[in-house]
Image (cartoon, rainbow, N blue to C red; front, side, top):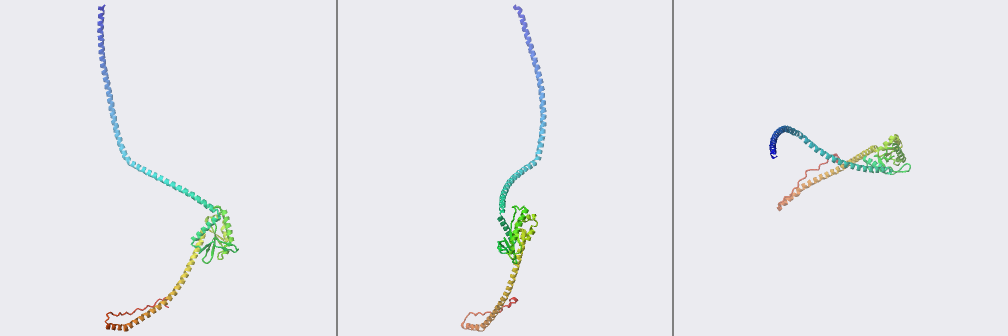
Length: 377
């Protein structure tokens, strides 16, 4: 039993050894093939990587060249843009300065506008006060009288000499009247002036009402008959209106107002027309003053001429007196030389006096008689 089983065991052992050897050989061959295949693959990969690296290198070189070109272009562009950048910088500085000045100007403008607004408020308040005052007839009358006085003084007339204010008088009807002013004329006459400020409304825009109010004042002045209270006054009264618009507004609505007033002996005068009249009167006063000065100068010349004649007589008498005094002096000198000095010399010789007696010189010049006719008596 044991003998039959030993042969298969040895065979089995021999078969296992061959299988192992075959397996080892097969494994070795597989390893060799695998190494060869891996080496081939590795070389292929290395070759691919090398090609990719060379391609990347070429691309990098191209990029570097492109970047260098771009850098050159950027440098040239920066050199070209540098003046523009400086200009822009200066422009920015100017813009900032302009903005600052504009801000300051707006601040000053705001201050001025505030001041103007304040002045406007004050002006409105003052205007309102004036309007309220003009509603009063007394205030309007004072305003007209003040304007009248200013016009008269501007014309060159003097208070209490060439004109008078609030002068009392009695007219032909026995009524006491007192005009606002009388202006004296050079020859003794006077012009009566009464100042009025008739305003139908404060603004004076209602021409019809203004004309009606003026006609009422004209009738009142005509009824006073100032010319009968002052005999040297002409038969008219000047009604002074302190504003040109008062008369022009009324005449626009009533063109016959001026002629009707003249027919009643009332002359409507504005500052311009009254100033022309007063300038004429002032010229007359100056002419009279010049004439009076000429008369005084003539009288003074005549008086001076007469006094020169009197002084000439006195001068001639003084010359005669001086002439006689010179003759008397020369006679006294001759007597002194012929009688006194001889005795004095003898006394000197006898008494031994050393001092000489002075000998006065005669006066040769004589007073000159006046040659001017005015100085001869």
